Image (tube, rainbow, N blue to C red; front, side):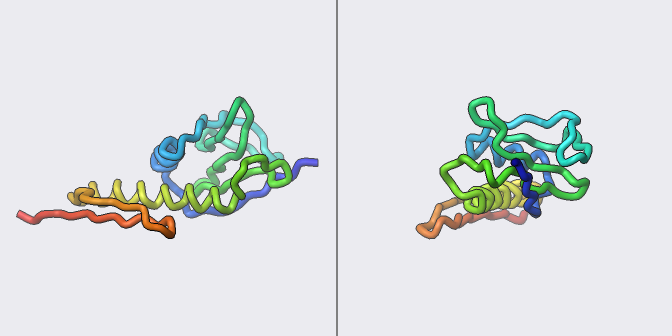
Length: 127
């Protein structure tokens, strides 16, 4: 028996989420209207797939995305918690770059540290 689990995230930008998934080499598609758990979903949802099989969905609730998957049928070789951490880290990185560029900053240097964190150096010159 299948049981979908929904995990709340702080992801709220569809464009940054799509860039993040692309950065992490995921194949995804916008989910057309369908029913999941007897609830209507819309094309804001993003379904991640591999080899023609749906792995998980980022479900849009009107304010933010939730990570939606069947944990009993989880087949990836990484625990879903670690995967979600990796997606969240890359999403945060992409958000920082987008927002800093918007305010006139430039990415000068970036480095992935031994603990997996990302060190990012940005600068802005005032004229």
